[in-house]
Length: 131
Image (cartoon, rainbow, N blue to C red; front, side):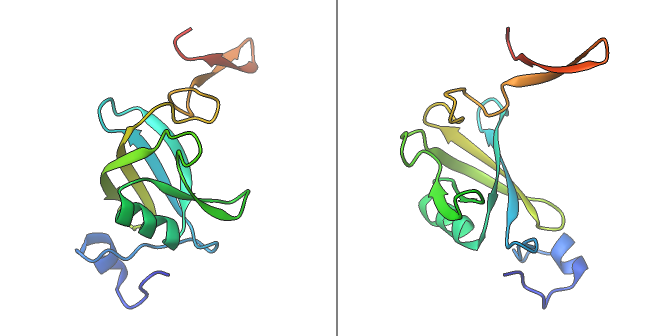
C-alpha cells in the first residue's frame, strides 16, 4: 500500500518510490516496445504484480476480470522483458519499456492497439492500422 508518511511534494519531486495505488489497490501500467516506442498494452498492477515484475524482469499484471496475478506470456511464451520502468509525477501510473518475445495481444496482433477510431459521415467505426 502507499506510503502515507511522505508529503505530496516528496511524492512528486523526491527520490523515494512510494506508489499511489487506487481504491482497488491498482496502478495503471502502460507497456511500450523498447525499440519502436509503440504502445503494446495498458493494464493494471497491484503490489504483488509490481513486485513480481521487479524481481523477475518479466512484466506481470493483476487481472481484474480473473481476480488473479498473471505474467504476460505465461501460456503463450510471448513474455515482455523489462528494459526500464518510469513513474509518473504522482506515482499512480507506470510506463514500462519492454522487449516483447512475440505478439503482445491475445488476438495475435503485435500490439493491443491495432485499430484506429474513424468518423465517417458522423458514424464512428474502427479501421485496422496498416490496411
